[in-house]
Image (cartoon, rainbow, N blue to C red; front, side, top):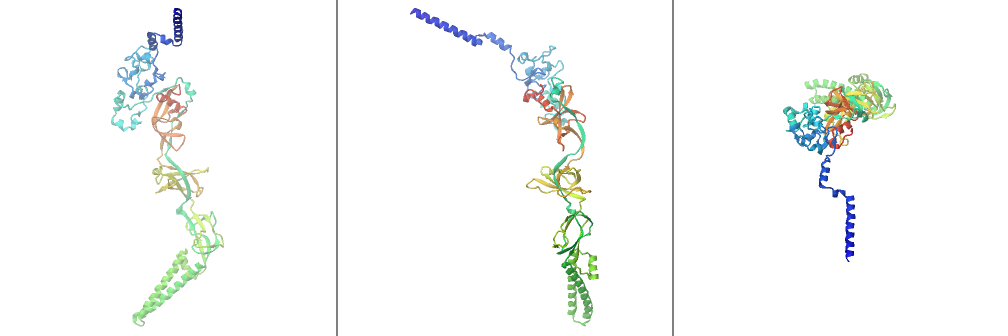
Length: 523
């Protein structure tokens, strides 16, 4: 019995020893002393996320790279407005906590934040002021709020108000050769004469004030056709001759009516004195006067009928004098122009409303432009228009807007605008489609940059200016679109002759946005 108990105890001790050795081998930290753990944890720096190698502090505390952090971080005013969390004079322990790179001269502050070495954390001092009011998001020279309170800039530096001057940090590449590797290219800012324009679809048409459709005004047969397509004609020139019985009957009626008037006039002249002396009854004078008036009315009717056929005063007198009752009627041009339509065929029957010809003055043309309702407010009468025919190599035609429509088409939501174009050589033709360019602004000197140079950050346009080998300065600008697809107009922020980054501008933008998107693309 005793041997059994001793055997069990020995087995238990042996098992415990084996388990202890296994645990010691697999979990050695369970057997470390409290002092060892404290020493190990004390020697390990806190993980503060991304580290700014350029300035030797955690990225989240680097106000040199991210000026906007000054609005949210607590600043140490005693030691140069550096972030309180990296002020090693107030908090010596943060040097090891964040593995800060210290001032080599022994001033007791981070190297790039040492005020005694002439450095500061304020981006308004270390970064060039580009003249932009960050608080109101406009250029300082155009900011009414800044003009009303000029001290706002200084108060912003002290943290009393939102800083107006918040220049963006310089972008410094690791080496000058890195610029070529990442594809950095530059271009020169240029100045050109420029005017804002509006482009829209357009279609040509004949000038309705110099276009006429010609009909014979009477039914009959075409006896002669004297004009053909393309013929230049003068006002009153005969284009065709119509043989019509209506014309002959109208002439005969006019001649008869003139004779009836003469007879009625003679009868009245003889009756009037006899009735006045009592030789004839008074009723005879009234009958003679009535007959005279009826004869004159008939003559007026016959006269007007011939006038409707196009006969003039001289021709009416000739008809009476010569007793002309022929059936011919001349079809004449109503104004100078060119025959652009011909339906007349010799010998064919025609009606009074049949279109025989159309004559147009092609030295000027109308242009109908379809302008979207969102753009029509900028279009005014008198503005210059240039029209280019689609698919043609001919030079553009010039003219001016002479009417802006008063309604919007329901289907296309466009307003029709009419312009008049000069066409002295006749190269423009009716119903041609193309693009119209309306100059909606006065011509002016414009500063232009390639569109690739302009980047967008915080709802503001900016460009990058080379400052030296591998150094680029961001400059906020006010950019406007132009009628060209490859350039933008800069209304503020640049002057002609400066150089701006075109290729690789987006990569440089990532460098000043590290806090928002992580490490930049040029590291």
